Image (cartoon, rainbow, N blue to C red; front, top):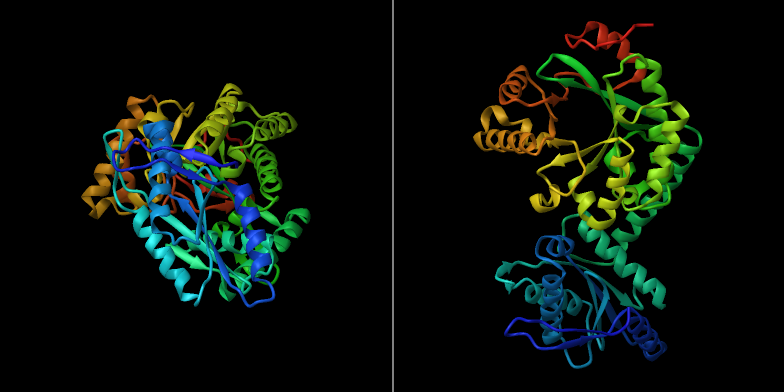
Length: 443
């Protein structure tokens, strides 16, 4: 990114010219050369503004530009004369701290900058609270070259976010986590190549008609030596590497193959598959889905693709483009975990979705939490007013089931109805359950 003048319209703000990524790399090279051989030390700090994309979506890009200008001015005002500020990405800034006497100065500088960024600001008549995650790396302690220093600072920023910390300075714990990530990625790649992953299917039922409406396909991995590895562990590894394409294509093909072998005659039943945030931003996913459907002769309306709110909001424009293309194919689109992310009704009305899934965190405690009951009822009413069907996750008792039926909820899933199971266990489950599957013929 080249040097970018950013100007704030806030009355207290001044015009601030902020160098970009190219200038940062050049300055790191100069600092490395200056410090090498004379025991010099400097630090690279990277800051990521949280929920900045949501600000652009909710208030417009002009408001986002104002936020960047105010943040730049505030950060610049906290730096010493020898330190430098850079704008290295849409929502990222970097700072070079020079002439460090002790490493502790780095943490103090980060906290001081975060405090300045976090002061309320008024933009276009709205009071906004801006927060920023931070990661830092020191030369030569964490790396003695430019690329290594950038990688270390980015890793610190990433692990701060993963562990809900305001900031992290690169250290031995992060190096250990990086090694574990690399090892797990290697194991996952071999598991995909050897077809060691399996799909389990959790029943979804039509609450108003008492029938089985379909299943959600969930990836499961039993490692030969480490045992069961949870999806919330290996799926992020796939998303952060090149493996998510392979994992998603495998999941779609395996789900269609197994589902139609089990329920080929059930024209009204659907199979739901989760779509990752990374693929949602890729135009290639549309062809990927189309190829899989052609292979197994699947009707578009028999497939439900689930995406989370947070996944859509990482890049709203690209997400809308991908979702629109999938919708035009006739595929049913569902917003998963609704209510736990950034719920923008202005954005929701633009999406070509047919279904909202209420997150289980609201459903599980409905019986003894009036606020959760109100949230669930509100989501059901909102969905129906927008001509969307609604699915409740996390049904774990007859009481919760009865409450959802009384609220007019369309569909539901949860351990009380049925746990995720291999496809081979579905026929006996259907035979022994109270949920009739129209058109199903046991083989």
